[in-house]
Length: 184
Image 1: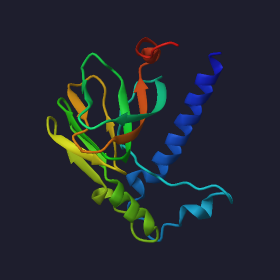
Image 2 (image 1 turned 90 degrees about the vertical axis):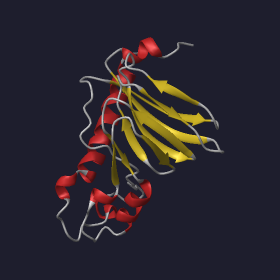
Image 3 (image 1 turned 45 degrees about the vertical axis):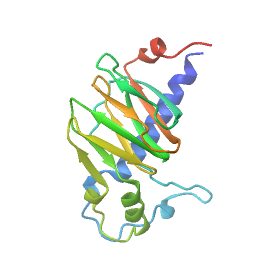
């Protein structure tokens, strides 16, 4: 029974590692970067949709992937007592986020998409990553991604007129999710 979460965690970590290696800034000076299709078997595609460089996560950690929807005017506070961090990818709508204690970054989906559309060009991630100062609010639009750390004050909310949908990858200390996740 416990084997499935362990295997799932290993697979997710491996996939995130592959994505991080492909997007990591050490390859910034390369020219004529080959398209991802050259390395992928036929019938398989790989499209980076976001990344969060330099994230510190608990080791080992529990991981959970979920789709979250925010109706207009809804949100929730970030609290220092909650150690769970989240990698968020906004699918539609927009989310306003404020983190009090740390500086954090947003990967702008439009800039990342434009960068990936010209793989033969020199890779410059500076246009895709936006740093947000502690205490400042930032809006994540469709296609944007960010890692929101755990253990901080702040909030996440939908200030827009339409529903906002996001995919979230929650990262918590081992057994941390079992206390927060409701059992059926």
